[in-house]
Each structure stands twice: as structure tokens, then as C-alpha cells.
Length: 110
Image: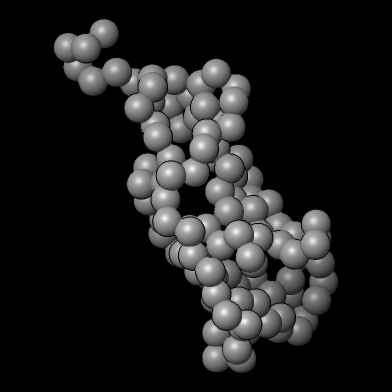
């Protein structure tokens, strides 16, 4: 049974690449200075979603994808960064938990 008490599967789009401005899927990264970092990765656009691009998830199941966020944003400055994943259409969507990443200077560079 799902956390909301549901017992039925839902269909969701399979996890896609890092940034899709048309499907409104993106990472947001806040840098050590409190400002949002600009995205520097590739932009990916998709055609209309087909049924074979969806996956059914039953309560308690999840779909995931590993992303190398360091290829998408510049983490060169030492300090704490805050990362979130956003996905949704027309303002109704999902936002991940915030993940904190601490970047320290390389040895011998302090």
C-alpha cells in the first residue's frame, strides 16, 4: 500500500536526461553565496510522450536515474551548495528533497 493509502499503479514518464525545458524537468543549485547557479549542460527537447516511454509504479516502488550534476553546474568555488530536482507541468509538479554538497579546497590550495 502506498503512503497515501492507494493500492493502484500510476503511470509516469521514465526518468529522462538532465534538463528538458519543454517538459519542465530541471535541477536547481544554490551556490555558497546564496545565488542560483546557471545551468551549463546540454538542453534536451522531446517529442510528444509515447506509451512505451512510460513505466507503471505500484505503491512503494520508485524510478530513478543517476546524474552527474557536476557536469551541469560549476562547483569550482569552495563552500556549501544546495541541489534540488524539479519536475512538472503548469506549476503542478514534484520537487525533491534538498541535498547539501560541501566543496572543500584541494589540498595545498588553501
